[in-house]
Length: 302
Length: 152
Image (cartoon, rainbow over all chains, first blue to last red; front, side, top):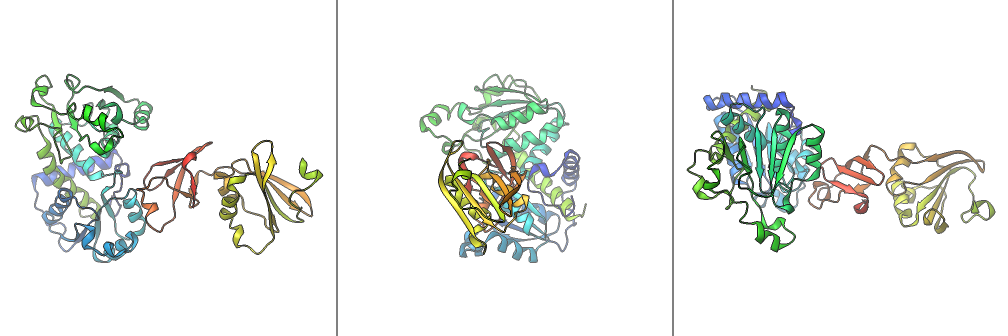
């Protein structure tokens, strides 16, 4: 993994994913380690994403490294019309590793081709966000004690949600059963179901939230966004159907945990927050340990 | 074999004849092969009658013998093209084009949010289906199908 860019979750094989998770667990036990003393990590956020940026910057700081970068392209030379290539080549001179978020799909891959330093993709449009997937896996393993043979229920926007697609690929190494719950317009696309069929992975599709989660070990919630619907009437019909309420968790398994990549809008009711099955805020904390592990592996200090 | 009776485009002594090009894609073929930049004689016919294609185009390029990999680039816009290699007015070799497994440049990714449509860079695709052609962008991984194919 040393000096290799992380653009897509498929850049890591099963063994490499497990190495990251093991190292993240080590950092959770000892979060302050001065491994990156003297190293500089650039965080280039061509579109704002405060949560992801702070998580990365916290990870670098806890490892004793320094951070440079920008949090919004309007405050950089991009607003003067500089190309991505020029920005990446310039920043490569000032840093050992570039973490980038960009609104255009494929931008991270392109950056990894032109940059002499490794790139970590922190989200390229609706395409990929691999560090989110690794932190989701870390959260799953931490709460369930294993990754193998789990029943994973994915709810909401399964058509456009990049986090569910990446998680689907990643978890497919561990013999899961998937339960997809989505409105007709936002169903899991055929290409992913084809992938599951090819690999002999069991999955079930439902439209209703209630009852279908009862055998799940993980409930992975996503946001149903208005702008995804071609027909506004369809959105109005389903917008309140995919809201998780505390009462719906009554018959679920005792070990089940509710995950959400955050930010949530209304898809998880506030009354779920105090339920011990809610895990989305701890999930965010796990992001720091996971990113510490990814950065250390790529910079070769672990 | 109407060409035998009366040639719509005059014969060449040496070179390459590219036949059965869909008429609407003639200029794409010219661009892909860079025929607008060469010094040799190029003649072409446009909107000729064809039983197979309805309207077809034909190009005759004097004194140039293309490499197969260059010829295969036109398969995106002229998948049924037939090539005759001419030496001393005789057809010495016939060729057809095949769609390559990878395509660099030539086509445009149909995803408006793809980096390749915003940065000065060469597009790159994996051919995931040959007929009708479907291209998977190496950057955004979205599929550009035959109906949305645009040549750069």
